[in-house]
Length: 222
Picture 1 (tube, rainbow, N blue to C red):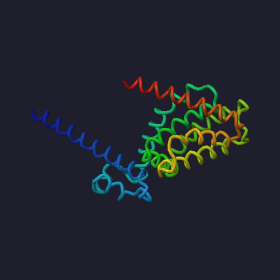
Picture 2 (cartoon, one colour):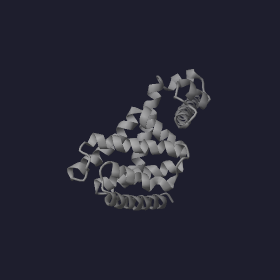
Picture 3 (tube, rainbow, N blue to C red):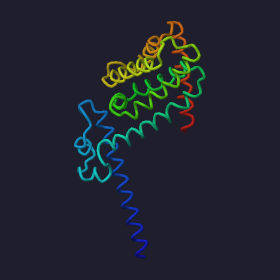
Picture 4 (cartoon, rainbow, N blue to C red):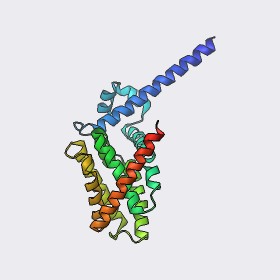
């Protein structure tokens, strides 16, 4: 009986620790998404989570350890959300445009998530590197196929990231909405050298791909 009691007590304690850790991570998300928070700090996170600083350090060595775990979670979410749609498209530029379309639609639908994405891309190096790795794959394939007019893949990556980050901030501030998504995707494609008609056609195809993926996701979630 005593052993069962000890095991149950341990299980309860473990569940409580897991809930506290999850609350700290969720508070970190809220801090990054909050436009009034200049920078995420241990103090800001613990205040948002409603825990003491000592409790924070029971779960994370420092702020960098928290950011690394948050970054891993965001990368996993991005992969789960975008990779199936990305990999279903053969043409590399349209593949990239499809992923950007889905991302921008998501950000337009959730301004706090837009703020989180924009700040994470700047302040969490692992997230930025993961995003750039996927862009590099698509843009390098486009260059190999003779589809990339910009001579440097690195330059093309910087152009795409800069435009998407700027759009994220505008979504988060409520200055643009989902109706701007096709214009942004066209601007991205034009900025990396697509001709106007080509950019428009790829943007339309990316929109159809995003619609199909959203429908598949909706059916699969029932």
